[in-house]
Image 1 (cartoon, chains in turn brown, yellow):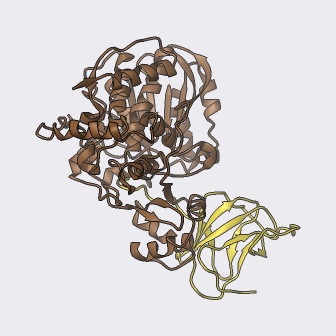
Image 2 (spheres, one colour; image 1 turned 30 degrees about the vertical axis):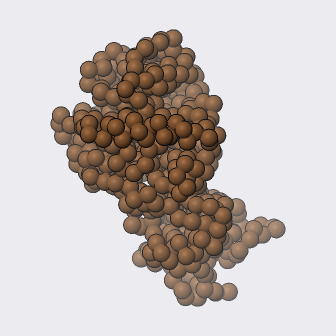
Image 3 (tube, chains in turn red, brown; image 1 turned 180 degrees about the vertical axis):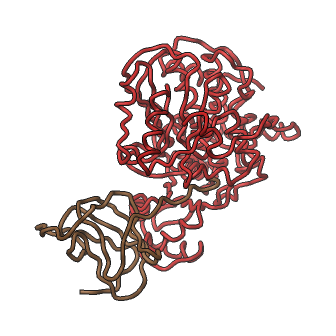
Length: 420
Length: 101
């Protein structure tokens, strides 16, 4: 069953980016893309917004402006369930697929709390001003406290939280401060991001011919190196790996020299991180025409708020929509904000290279995801009924074929001798 | 004056804009200083004079003692340095990145 959802979103994205191209290619119905990507089995319930088709649309748009597309994935939505399918994970409604985050009640609502590292538990006594060491003790306290109180303290402390609500869709999904124009052939991209969204975005660009150097600090490498190897390879094969200790002068100087050679920077650090190192995005993009600095943050930069894929998914409204439709909130997908943002990140960078525009690009993961969900109509139970039966009738068909890494991602600092 | 601090309490400097949140602390009598003067709950009306040598505090950084028995989060940076009676307080290395999110 083919529909226009993906192509319409692709055309919207291209028009948002000021690119005059028109895509005419039908793709799987949103309910089918949601099921075949693996999202249905991860989440248990049909999502009544065309998010999976919009992931297809983002990849269609990327293909429309890329020269080499043979290595790109077949469709965008297959990226959404990829990690959970490799790891064989399901979400438990109120539990994230990865198992480290939960939906918990407050005295006036519900929030997601995502304690992805065991050491994050150390912060909980300070957050609640009470001694707490497990989820049931924690929930006994949070149910007596207000959502606002819990959110504002968590945000202050750098604890990942998200409120179950349905925010309005933003009018735009990026901010672009344009500085200069230039043609960049086979651009050199420094990717200083880690985990999923940034590395996925740069890997997609790598497939279209860009050269990628993954930069890590030796004492704080990409945590995904210690997660599932197969998935890590998918995101990081075909990248050179350089490790630099930014905290000594020699390392900082090496980083600056590499930045000097680079055409594009991708980073997902806190706004203060580069400031404290004395590195400025504005100075970088002004050094040579066409240079691009992309900053990926969980929320808007002025909020200085951290987030991970699952809790950002809640903040963007996915659990609020489930609550609205089924009467109880649940997580949707596995760190869903990550793959959605990876796709949009690759697209906006390719668009800038295509249009030969340099400058500073800000992407905020919550807004990108909320944008990609499309408009939500509160009275759309009818749409849901139709979508459910479309996916039910598809139950005997296989899911999308899984991607397989063609090689091994390189080790930490494997290419130091080449680049430093 | 020493006191027993509870995790979660926010303390302000009396010599600069520094504000910290106590994340972890042993339940024993302690005194927490910034720029040489004891820190208190609530911002002071007038700032006192900074004492001794100070490297200042950086917003967002965590501070801990040598054996990591206590931890403070800087929620507002300033010129004063944090110290605790009988303990050396320094910036804590950033937490490891998670292996999945």
